[in-house]
Image (cartoon, rainbow, N blue to C red; front, side, top):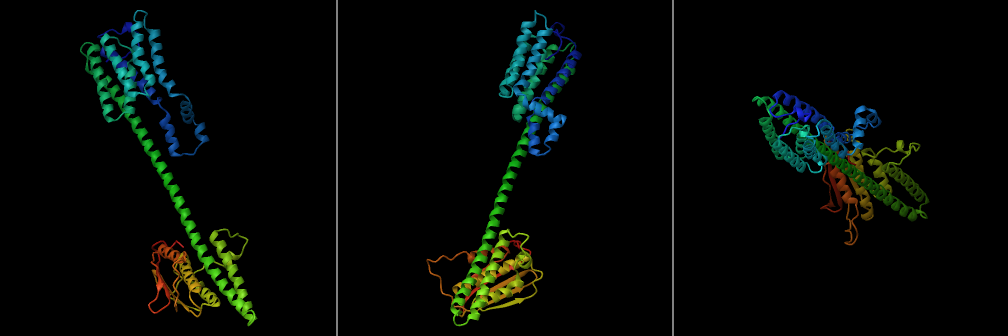
Length: 449
């Protein structure tokens, strides 16, 4: 394949010195490198997008940012047409009329295919190589030989390793043929080294561009996967929070309504025989209702700062089990409470779980156990765990087959599992019903309530 030189054809006869060829291809290498740097600005823009710099207007004002954005507004076809136009202009203005038809035809065959190099890089490379071979056969040297380097760069940037090696070998073979024909006085090595350097440089630039594009694509894909993962994590967090609020609402509403219903029945029964007891029951109903409203506001997160209930009613814990036992006793379920060990080291979330488990177990006993049933609550606090046991004196009638079991026991199992425990609920061998679990502190997610 032919080599190129920017001078007139009259001064480029065969067998000229190797120094002239070396200078010619050094110039071609600088021209090709400049064209390759400005050939496709879009990878740099994608890098800004993936990096998410967020600098906005600052980047718009910077010189490099303005240049990149300006290039992005110019269609790639315009950039690809620039080199063919310059090469044709050079031929028309520098070659004499006698050599102009052949030189112009060969220049067009070499340069014009570069306009479509992005759409069909391999086809353009093959076309340019064929035109260069014809040029070599007719023994004409042209500046348009730089199209070989651009075509090689494009092929290396858009094909795999095998295609790049094959294209490089083809162009390198053309360099050998050019040195054999146009080197003077047997000076083969110097022009061959120079031409080989330009070939390798064009191929390496193309490989670097392809590698950069692959890296940017991988980074973009990773960023998309990360965004999807974050979105999924957010959805899971929302679902978990909804489940937590649902459990809280179930425990609050079920317990307080059960207590209020039991107290209302007792007040209706005692209003004629013992008005004082009826009045006390009604006052307790009122207090239970206010406590339920406070718990609901706290659980839903809509308690306003101007409401003092948040300070007067902190999250319930083991210390509030005595008040819970008194409340159940007032509703008609005598409840004994025993707390073993100190509970100051138990996290607030774990204490809330203990409170909710006891509350739900006592509420179930109040709803399903017959009159005269007594309940016992045992809380065993140790250094690494908290045991909870709630039993009643029984016998509890079995629920009808068609009646729904509700969400009480499943919710209790979820709370216990969130704290590394396993809940057991069922009838006791000696009669009655029992609920037992042991919560692990510092394991299993004590933060879940």
